[in-house]
Structure formats: structure tokens, C-alpha cells
Image (cartoon, rainbow over all chains, first blue to last red):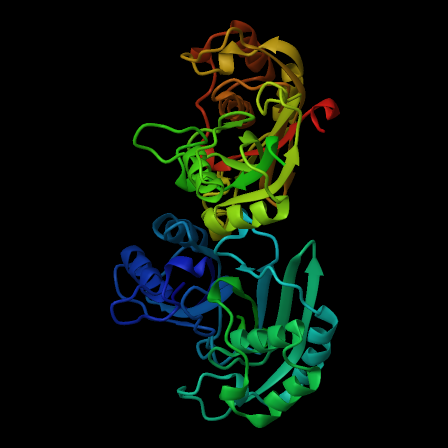
Length: 249
Length: 249
């Protein structure tokens, strides 16, 4: 059936300049749109729940598109996966209402940031190698200040087109297992570079270079210059995007 | 302290032509020996528990070497890991008796073969994508025939320097979790290409192209022509090598 659909995809970001089509750089969007054009015979525009930066991975990303022709879902997914490279996969395709929007309809996004403290060839490109001791309790104490509806300008890239920097973070905490660190963060929206700047600042707390109170002050300052350096993209995963049930048909 | 050591390493095999030094091809051995030469200032020969073929991974591989100079273990490991590329890691270094041999002293080797049935960007190069139904019970019934001390010529590459094809397999079975298949096999020794030829033949059983009895007959025939096609290297992992406690000092 023709109409608007959400396509659920996943990708390893290492080989791509993020989601969005960019000049002289390969984005996941270009690859996906070229693939769909091959199948349906015409150009179909796509829009994602959000841009991922260069090198960032997606375990779950949603993209909306208006299918101009009738099609069989299973057959379409099979063909998309056969054409897409090995590091991008289509997981499902779901009919949505005509005004559903992958970005504007999303209720929440979840990201994970992964780090490992022992050199591990199998995590290369998939986790940030950080072989230094960390005070996880202090990092989690600092995370408490992130929760709630706040202005996160301190953790946003400066030149972005957003109207305001207020995000509502509902979850933010670290866990550790066998020297592998995992940071989970969930919010209604994220600003550009926000997770990597937050993680970078939390690492300063973990090293003891910043106190938990210093971290709280950085958040209050609304000054990006005060926050820690952004951590590398290879550890960052978009893991879940949630939508209200009303958008599905 | 000078003397013989076992160096425990791990590597993602995708970028290497296996363990051994080959003409015009990069083997893990060359990279490792160049790295050690940089640290100790002279060439040090290494010998591994066994060769891995092109593209095969090692979660645990042991290599012996005679350290010509006194050294600090922790410092040595730190420097080795700093020099080795990201897809090879040194895990530990253990003093062994002067006649201990990484290959000849080994009591057993374990391999895993990994497959996945749903396209997964995060398993690309690390697991064999096999999107077809499999009869796992029949495959495990066939595995029973592998157990014991038997002639495995049917599953060996033909041109090898071995004196005989008898191996003692102590464990061989499949498991499945969420469409990811895992084959475990443990033996005192393995012949060249043996695990991949066994897995290829077991997949024929899983597809229903061969019966369990057919599989038993292939094993008895000692004829490589009768066995199934070798599966790709990307799914194969050397996971464990065991030594008798007497070799350690």
C-alpha cells in the first residue's frame, strides 16, 4: 500500500559521515535513498528521528518516507537489505499516519556511550578505549544533576539552528562490568554534540579533575567553554526512539 | 628475567593473512615480531599454538618466545599494546620452562563458529550471515559422531605436512539464541581447514541435504571430496588453548 511509513534501521557509523547528506561526504541517508530509488524506480525523500554525527552508531534509528507505489513489506525489506552495504540494515517497516514525522513525533531518544579499560581488538571502533581509573560513584552523583527539564546550552555545539536549549532528561547513569563502562541517557530531545560533551565532562569528574559540585556549576553556567572535551564518536550509540501509539495505523 | 615466556594474545583476523609469516602478505606473526624487536632491540622468534587461516579470529592465542634481556612484565605488555595495531592485543606474559612449546605442549584447543540469521551491521566480519532455516537437532545428532579419537582426513585440507589425521574431539555441539548460532568444538589438535569443513558439512545436515547417517559416512570415508564446502573464515574464533600445569615455572 502507498503512503507514509517508518523504516527502522541500524548501522555501524564508522564508515559514514553521520546520517545526513553532506557535500563530498558519504552519509547513511544518501546510501539509503539511492537504495530505495533502485527498488521503487523513483527518488523518495527520507527524514530520520535525528542526525547522528560522523562515526556514531545506531542500534535503532527510525526514518519516515512516503512510498509512492504499492509494495510488499517483506519483499521490500529483503531487497533493501540485499542492496544496502553490510554495515547498514533495515529491520522493519511500519505504516504510520500521513502526518507522522520521524523527528517531530518522537517522544524520547536513548543513547548509550561505551568504554573499555583493557585493550580489546573486538571492541575497536565500537567502544572508546579508556585505560584509566574512574570514580564511578562520583560520576553517578553528578548524573543526578542532569535529570529534569533544564537548559543544556553548556553541552551543546554553539552554531546550531535550535530555538532553545531546554531538554528533559529522564534517565542518566553509568554502570560497569569487567572493566567495560556503559552510560545510558534518555531524553525527549538532544542538542548537537550533547551526549559526547556530557560524557567528556563526567569523565573529568571520574578522574577527580572536577567535583560533583563543579559539574553542577558547569550545567548552570550555560557556557560550552566550561564543559569537558567531547569524547570520541566510536563509543556512541543511538539505541532507542519512542513514539506515541497514536501515530501508527 | 631472561628466558622462555608464553605471550597470550588476541586478534581480529579480518585484516591479516592468518598467523604465519607469508610471502607478500601480512601475518599477525610479522606484526608481533616487529613490535617485540622495537622493544628489546633485537629480533625474537615466536611460535604460536597453531596457525589460524586468513581472516580467522583469536580470542585466546598463545605464542612462545625466548626473551634475550631482563624486562618488567607490566611495562613490556604496556609497550607491546601501545605499538601493536588496535586489532591485536597482548593480554598476559607468563614464565614457562625452557622446553615448553606453544604448539607441542598444548593439551587442547577450543574453537567457536558463529553465525547469525538476521542481517546485523554489528556482526559484519565477526559472524557468518546465514539467513536460512536450520535443523539444529539433526546437526547436534551428527555432532555425536565427531566425539572420540578418530581419523578426520575427510575434513582436512589435502596438502598438509601432517603425519596422520587422527584427532581426539572431546566436545562438539551447536546452540542457538535469538537467531544467533554458536558451534563449539574442542580437541587435542585440529587439521588445516578442519573446523570450517566440519561446519560446512553440518550445515548440509541442517539444511536437510545430508542425513545424520550421510554425515557419519563422510567421516568414515576419509575423502575430503565428500565433505561439504568450507564455511567463511569470518565466523571462526580460536577461543582457548590449554597447557599442562607442569610447563609453568
